[in-house]
Length: 346
Image 1: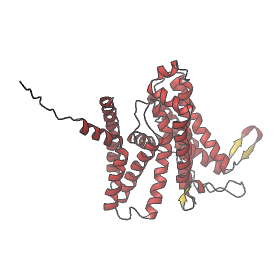
Image 2: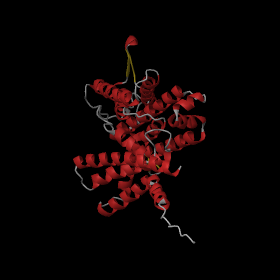
Image 3: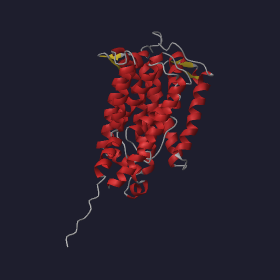
Image 4: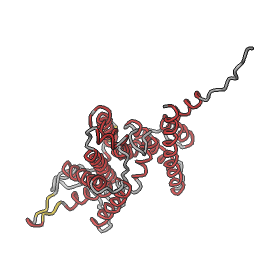
């Protein structure tokens, strides 16, 4: 007697398409955002608007590059916005008031390259403090960097008693002119911050993909215990990624102060949320071990384009907060979905 087996439709193709769309969510979101705002917002794609947007994207991407390394290890850095604010204030203080050496009674006005170096190193030192709290004292990354958020913001306020350092153009008498060029200058018509972030992204992508340190970062995020047993210095790698994140934040603070030609202690508020959203939207896992610099760059484009597009459309600042918060939650949800689909395919 012949038997006929019933055929059950396979859901594999649909699951495969859904997984692909989730992996490419940043590109899909960027396409949707560009089409939406170019249709509804006047002059959205004009040269002037695109250049301004590129500078804003560069700021998010710079923070995102450092945040990517931290998240790849399974950590988080909530202090980057405050570090940016503090580094900008330090730069402003050095340009306006110089560095006072009390025992000698001298006031030294550093050159702009020296100001940049000092501010970036300051960011790296705060990042090292974060990494030390996490590795040496066993403090959870969320708590350690949340505490440092308040420490850095308070230090920025104390530096000027809550006031702004204005008119950071320098003086020919002190040889510290040229600071505004960092944030507002252009080379071959391209804003300097955009060129800086492109070079930084290329270097960071190379390190992550082609060097032993990059492999150690992924290994620590994938399984810290296994990495330790394999000879990876987990504590050193963890501290290094927080230093990288802090230095990126310090550079961002400089560029923001340079662009505005002033430094305000509240500068950089909520920057950390945009950076985290860009990283997760770009495909990184908050659990660590998965993510790329390229994905973060695309995620930064989405967050920056969304913010500027809403401003051009006259969307209320309150609604902007609601929408950006929704995007962050959605990014985390898609991260969980990607992990779930990845588990089904394995």
